[in-house]
Length: 204
Image (cartoon, rainbow, N blue to C red):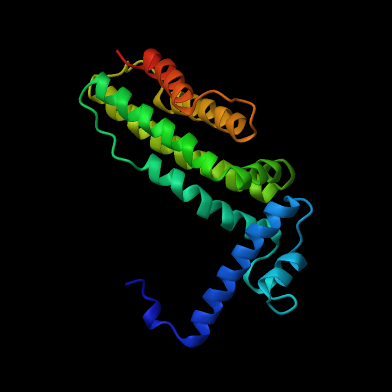
């Protein structure tokens, strides 16, 4: 039950129009790249009336950040996986799987992620959105580090927030390199190397 049965015909049409614009936006951004894409092109592809896109989105940056949220949901799901290890070995296995799934999710959306990378460099709105996404991940990692420190599995002298930032930024950098084809190593090998480096320093 998604609640749509309670919506009026007009509300359902508005939801459909919004969805059509997002789908059209995705296609236009993939074809043209972020800088060359225009709201006019998106409107045309969505077969909506002139200027309709502006009823739903302030500008292409606004529409693109909405698309980013949809793409990032896969990665949010990975970050939200339960993390309550009772041993260093269990923690290693879970972190390895999360790291692998994080990289895999970005590669599954590789072409869109390339546009995200371009957009971060040219749009303050998209950059702010990406910073918010970063902050969300870092909060989750900090919480996980605090859990293992309190459980006596990790060195409690480390600043959880600082280590969380370092771990996320390292993963983010490697993710971009994978997306842009600058790293061609096996995904499992990449994930294992990163996890060994991280857990080797943090865990007792």
